[in-house]
Length: 366
Image (cartoon, rainbow, N blue to C red; front, side, top):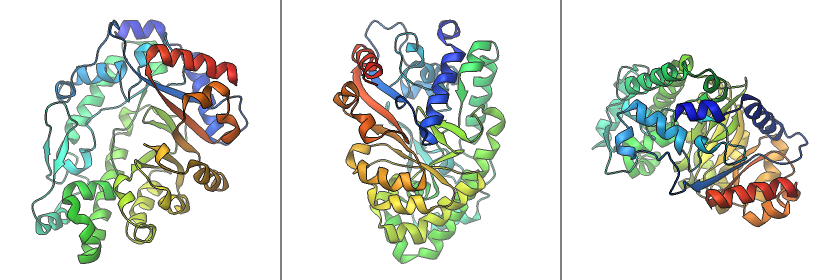
């Protein structure tokens, strides 16, 4: 499979894709918006991903999966589909890496992603403050580092892959999301019951996220400068904070009790983005008010009033990442009437054949 990719990947094409993303992220005029298509692999496709449970402890299988089918798109289909997929791979250990530093019990059931079993009591949760947040000999951190070393060792034998493939950060979550993993749903009571303790814990977790992101830099080749890749898209800045749990709190609570920790991570790492799944529009103004926020990434943009969010984001020149659009808007070109720039797109095509047809029609409509 590596020899297949060495043959089909084209550095000049990847550079053009990168340039298109940067124009959109800089709110510059462009002919069309970057589009990534998601799809199932064809039954007769020669490369099939390994079960997630097998890849977790096998760097070779993890690398293979990242190249074959990650986030429902495929670098290995680059010669079959002319979309704007960045060739980016990561050590995929799910969402639990930072939580593992603090003694969290990690479990994986069947083929589901690994998850954290919450700590048993508030007293144990508070003991997080006794842990060194930058002791990266703990938890899954050594496993993550070894995986990146393996990725780099393998790619070193393939000069074309080195030019085309970006090795990027794993999912490091965010201070609040990691705290929720460790505490469970009781964390929402803690905002009222022990706010000072919770604030101190999230500060501790922010230090761990900052430190480990910096610790991994020698193994990454992200860029160009000021841009990185997450979720199969280019983003502005150097880190993407996941804030899925924040959708359950008010904008006031976010501003007073979570935003300071997000701001610390963003500022320490040179700016970045905020990600949310679900309905998060009530938090958008708070996200945009963070001094070092550079973009907002959506897991489920269709659950939000994206037109209203786009108006707010345009005032801050903060692009919106991975906006999901219906196929008809791509086929007709109407998407550019709504979002002339400042947006990157995703469309769930279902199959590779449909993805190919949609991409061809989208290019023509633009």
